[in-house]
Image (cartoon, rainbow, N blue to C red; front, side, top):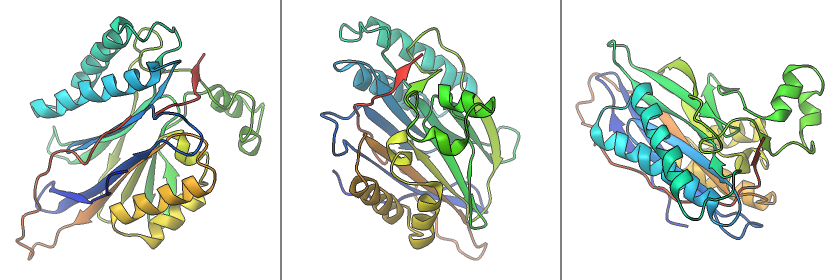
Length: 278
């Protein structure tokens, strides 16, 4: 796995970002059908599904289309949905994605300041997740699109019963599995000290929410936090591909005249996932 490094970007006179990301095949999968993009202002994780190479193609096609949006410098919900529509066409047209179950989750966030107010816009399709760590608390921002989540919401099972449920890998929405359904969006304000954790379910299968918060408490540097969580997920079994991005929001002192550098992407890669679309 390439060395994990922390990248930075100045968002405004008051705020900056620092981030790092990594992906790993895990201990049990033969290949990696995850992919990620960490390129200001967009940070996303895609967790592919489908037989043969289908999942890898789906996740990488989606990330490639979104990278092209970043390259234009005009990231918005409209541009993201157009890119996802193109990714669906790419997946369907690819000769190695004949399986109707081929697709990918997509979750992440981008920086939006269209009306002069800088905020996160969190997006989600599937059961990969975005967490917000603020004031020493960890909150799951996204809602899983999964059969198990629907059972929890209807009161038929408890959150504790969700672990190990026979339908735990069945998701209800994905990119490429059918006609594109737009992502869910949630706006979140930026506060200095906040951290976002964007991850595939390969991480959350191995680490509890408390475990994620523990490693954030112990590691302020995003690259160190990513490495610590990755190591723990692999030591706990690494049953799936594991991909995560940690983004830290920094309050910039007015007296600090150093310009945080603009960087391109922290990296991408690909993963084998056992998820299936309903």
